[in-house]
Length: 473
Image (cartoon, rainbow, N blue to C red):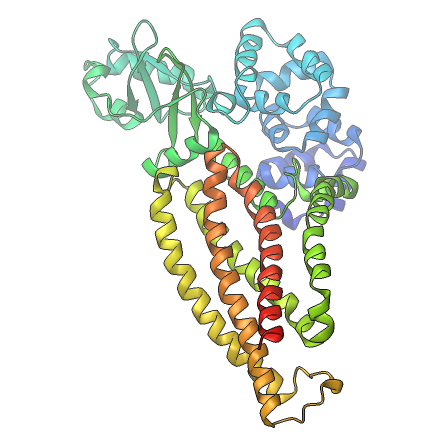
């Protein structure tokens, strides 16, 4: 059963009544993730504190790792040293490092002050790695087994230490200098003779990553090799940590969310949507809106420069939105396809010529079909009066000059679309690769730049063709 079936008012009622028995029952019956969603909606830190005082420490430590940043800070502020120590003792080190990385310095100092020396050292190691690197998301809680140990000795170590480790399914074989020699899985330990040496049955063909490897690259390794855990090595090839699949799921969700927001010209939001204040959302989006508005002045300038042709052939203004939207939409399709291919490592900078050749073919076919459809559709709209021509044109409907005029209009729009689609789709393919070449995020650069360039260029093409068609013919 999901905790979503429980209303927040029910939880608040238990807290108001100080009903410890029912609160503990909630933690025993429902998933921590669902409970965290409810707890994040509590308004009073005292209610949070009551939960952490009365419920099982194992449950509350896991709950803490899923709370919003603000709720975590609220708790740290009111926790006593004893409560902080209990929280640290029941939390995994990578979870501790995760929430410390987002906290103010005074709260970080408060937590590190009460941590025992060995834990403090491990946390400091994790915090000193570059953000979004393998080192920043790894955990140091894993099982290592000496390469000269027997299967029986390995099983005994797993029994004694495994309960507090991130995983017991993959165990890491190291030599006396902590060089990783191989991985032994729990089934190998269970099904082999106890007198065999672990180095005789370990897997030596393992996948690993470096502490400075970007977390997005690590997620690709998990996907490509179908991994559940990956060892992390330092520059000297020593084993320093591991990353598990649950850490990578969080990374994938975070990276996907950031890309979606960036492509929509919004800065990444660090917390859950329901917990973010309206003004915070405004401040994430308004800089892009102002910036794109200033850049969009180029389109306004273009329209102003060709005001004469618009005044003489007023009907041309009716097709401006459609031309701009179609160019932008087709270009954004290419941006989405190429950005995704870059993100999942299907293409790299080396594939530049392949991408250009392929997208050129796609662009030509798309432009031809769209232009043909546009010509027929616009001709139909004008011929049926769905789009009405100005009354002062002096051309009786369905006579020779009238037919020639609507043919010119239809041809002008379809030709403009053909050229602008070719341009926008090629730019939509090039900009993400150029961003990659410049070590920029393709999701950040692509859509805003493309929209601005396509809007300006589509208008310029439209007006130049219109000026030529109506002034020289």
